[in-house]
Image (tube, rainbow, N blue to C red; front, top):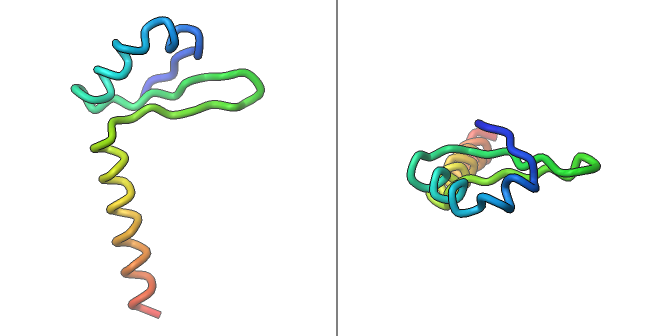
Length: 63
């Protein structure tokens, strides 16, 4: 996970988007007033959502 300023991110968006997709890199985009954001590939996001769904499903069946 790498941190990058919002101005650098905006100047080099294509590079960061490609690294997120091709190299599965995750970026924290540092913004003013703690309004930070995260960039990750859609595949990584979908995998996180899938894992969360499975954990929640497992928690509901064990109650």
